Length: 68
Image: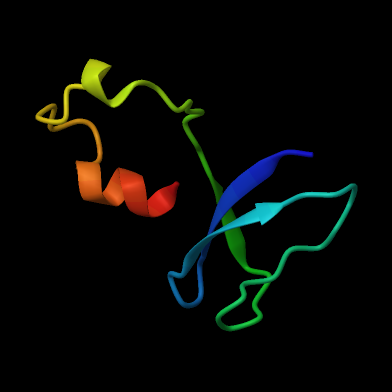
């Protein structure tokens, strides 16, 4: 079951949702179904010493750890 990222077009809330079958998705903040599916990058947990935390194209270390 894939996890998708969405952005609500009504309130701009961004959230992730586990999709099961043809389940209707609603914004958890405003309950709207006026959503835009976002493109997500897949990721994997790697050895911290191998990551270049100074790369500006990557999230900072604190943001990465918060999302784990």
